[in-house]
Amino acid sequence: MMDKRLFKKLFPNLAKEVEDGVMTFSIGGIRWSQRCERYDELRNPDAISFIRRCKNPQEAEEVIDFLERRGEISHDYAEHLRKQLREKGLESFGEHKAPGYYFRKYYRRGSIP
Image (cartoon, rainbow, N blue to C red):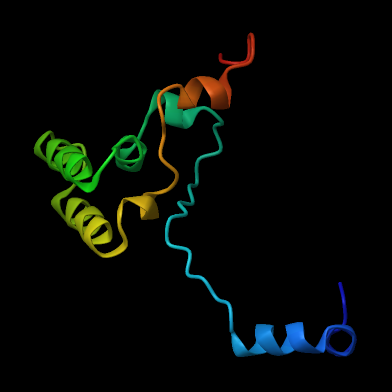
């Protein structure tokens, strides 16, 4: 780890930008989970996994409505997802899962139990 004074001496402009927060970017699309199982999203996809398959916000809204109607997500969580969709857009849920996403991500001969 580098000492703060040494960093300022070696990179004065960068240190000033970091301290002033010149180039900050809010990250809102990360999900943290207590689960450690590697293939959980294959076996038990959640609402966000389905939303990430959507091509536009209207499809995402339909997915949220469907999951709420079936009782797979609560009304409060559905409202939270709708608010995020309206305010931050579809991209805030993560990268789009194009067809073949799971195959490319998980498939290695004999790796899926």
